[in-house]
Image (cartoon, rainbow, N blue to C red; front, side, top):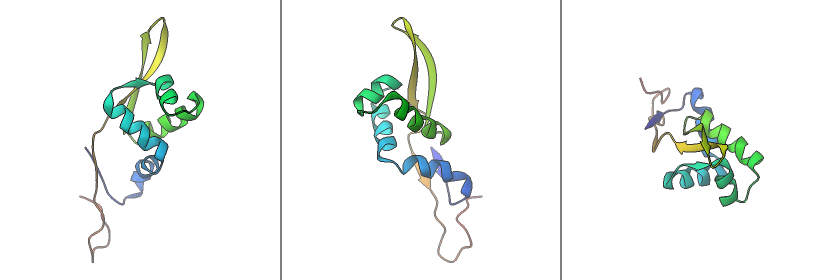
Length: 100
């Protein structure tokens, strides 16, 4: 589980979650690991566009990828790295929401 707060270091995570396409990728990967080509087909996107979304999800450490030899070629397999995100917001009257 990722435990985040309002520290600016978590901005890549929030950016990754602020996209309907990336949320759909997470939902599909919750079913099973998939390669980029299959994900792109399921989402009706080009592989190039999906790759940009995959990079943002990787930067947020929500998914991981690895190259796998399969069916006579090499495929970039994507899988969930985390299954939950907890966000600690600032408490009323506190100066920040950072968890120590």
